Image 1: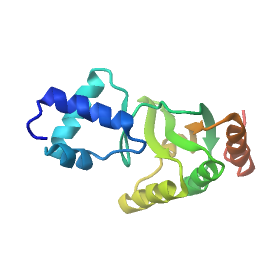
Image 2: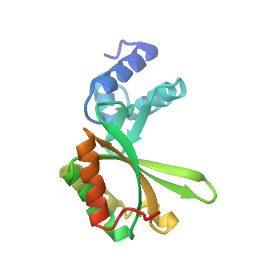
Image 3: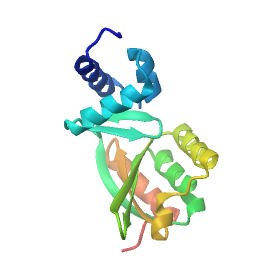
Length: 173
């Protein structure tokens, strides 16, 4: 595919991400289009600058938050060591944690893509956290944070909310 123009490559990247049900890594895209990973990173930056709804997640790029289901926000609070238990509660109840958001006093809203919907996704995320010695974003706010959660239906949303309540993760208003 190296004979493609840069514009055609970007159009195909956008289409591939729209069609994929899973995140696609920059390295995988680089292999598909026979270019370097850095070229893909630049292509995605240009696509985003042009208005494409592409999110970089720990597992790769995803196009938009579209998809079936109900999207809602949960306000949570817990110490850092409870991060895994919280994410497992969400996915075990049938939800998908799309991101984590904190309100920083200097930078304002800071968010990090999660895109975890299975126990395997959570385990892979926790492995990366451990491997890099990363701290949760909620460390910046004393444990207070938001999660954008997608559920296939209202019943599942109620199950996720109940699981978070039962575990003591939902922030009491």
